[in-house]
Picture 1 (cartoon, rainbow, N blue to C red):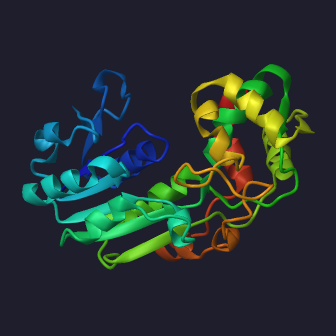
Picture 2: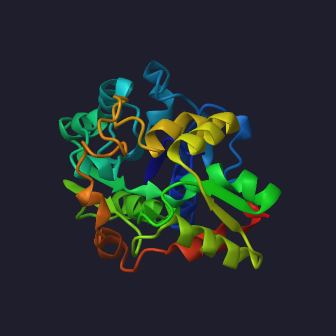
Length: 287
């Protein structure tokens, strides 16, 4: 058995690779820059880009299962090449917002129409998203500046997303399923900051700021923070359209994302990791 992991150096992809290696599976990892991949030595690392599927033929050769990072524009071409290469099972990294009906995912649609076995993994917000936004100010000042102090969020540990994906790749019985993945409970920004402080063993100050001020700070930070600011703070909806309500979310129904789903435990046999565990796992990033 050989499994191709696309997005192999990403937040979830690295965990998928590591967990497959631990399971004793032959793994081929697709990345744009193999020299910088820093994956386990037993992994076959190949160069490739999902946005340029014509160059993926070699990466797909001999592959039976595939973990597919969602790239909408080239999805149908990638899926067609996979089917032609003999891939029989695909697990798609999608999003819980699809379950909520906030948008559709053309990658899901392409895979469903392919005739191959498929499973969709739909996580809610990543706990790690805030790492990239908050870590610089925590390291420099031991402070977090962000709005929504006491509004509950549904967040998930990236290792749990990978665990469900790996189960769907290796086990039978997951074909035709879409798993919505959440953590064990809702958590507020204030509680997240407190969990990080507890992991550090040092005070971390929380300063609630307006959405507008948070947007300024994130845009100035650059990188992921700047790119995701408008969506995370509610200035745009999924799909990039301007948000309709005064708070940025009024025109969308988020109720499906505000409940705890049982899918992680049903698939893996254990409860999902909580935010405090995530904070401990990422302690070095905050130091």
